[in-house]
Image (cartoon, rainbow, N blue to C red; front, side):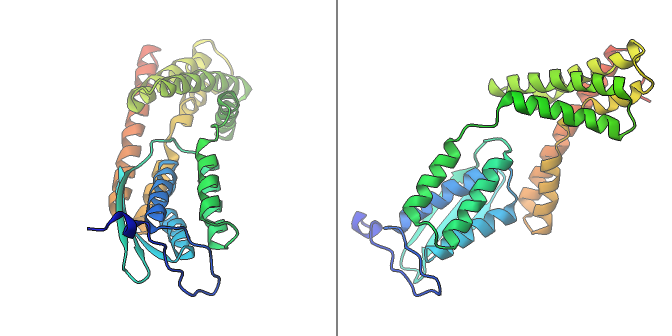
Length: 276
């Protein structure tokens, strides 16, 4: 069993083409890479990106990192180049919500480390700053999502009254979604309720005779809930050979789609509209 002195032993720097300053102990690298991987996967990264980012940082710090990526956990093993030291950690995947901003900034951090522009201590400071940064302004996201969904309505042939109805339906549904997620409500219940609210409001175009395309308003009023990123990530993981994560993400996306459909059908039945 390793003693405390052995655990804090300085990692020997191997000769590389681009030498990089190594941290004082392999244990610190292991802890950092485990937290990094947890955050990156929790923010919506694909498994292949996770492997590449962690791998390039490990090589820059003259060690080897091997991961087993599971749907809810990451099994991380970090070895020194001569295999004299090894640390293994199992980290739960962070439920941080999909964030392109954090995903991109964490990926940029791995390239800065790989290029030798920052050392280990600076990488830890940057990582802490990224993970502690505030999320995008909720009101801005609410407005942009509503405008985007109204644009989808136009893309599918909706007229301006239908676009206005879709904008209002998305605004209300998205607001309820943000409110429920802040209170940590179950995601499936959230999708059902938000789809129901948006479908009921979207049906107002036909109920009050607004425009000539009320059916498009109803159909596009819930598009903001479609789990496109989990679907895309599941196919990406499948192509990369991560079948367990791929299947898990695909089933998760299917369940959310079923919840969306249930809320939509409930809204149409409430407004006495035919589904076919």
